[in-house]
Image (cartoon, rainbow, N blue to C red; front, side):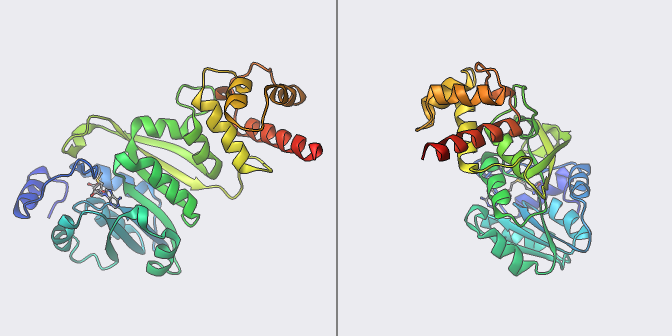
Length: 289
Ligand code: SAM
């Protein structure tokens, strides 16, 4: 069966009385090159164990199965069970787990289902939960690479450099842990039903070290969130109005000590800049004691 042929997909879904769920972000691929190129981008081999989120009817799952040692695919919609039983017949290295991927203990799942393999994520994500999913994959700490298709706007934000309109707190969080690459776009015409937005495939590689040394990571991310919550304000005003215990005078002194303009806005600072500022605040607090 050709799982990206629109007529075959329609016949398969009709045979199983399947109804698309918008709330589960169900937009299935209908162009063969897309699952092929996503799976190729994940750089798989026999040593790779892939976690996929949402196999749908299994078109990307089958591509992953051809290239990896093992594929574990977590699907929330049980209505897809009889369909996947049919479409994944013969894919011996695929295990489908029914449940909410956000409720799984991901390191334990990867270790139990794919022991001895290098763990990676590859998926066409449900777009409405992109940020919680990426956060969970990154915080799980066990995935070397994450290759996913997501909404183009979100992909741009994740990969954005400082000083651009797309640069923000979530992108900095991702870039703190992972090297980011924006790979290619996929138009709405490649899906059923067609989404309203263009999609992009990104690849994230886990960094062996964070891009800067920071004493208090929590404080640094508090500064970053404050800066981008009020991105039109100067960093001094944004931080002193939102981060308890950091005054305007203290922030001005910190920026002066580090040689930054005291009217600087957070959106132009790179991660190294935020790390330096957080370290200077921490140093000030410890000498105060
Ligand atoms: N992989 C298929 C493809 O590319 O055609 C389907 C991708 S579709 C964009 C997203 C899939 O994720 C759907 O099958 C949906 O049911 C599933 N899904 C949505 N939320 C989920 C969750 N929290 N946990 C597991 N699967 C989920």
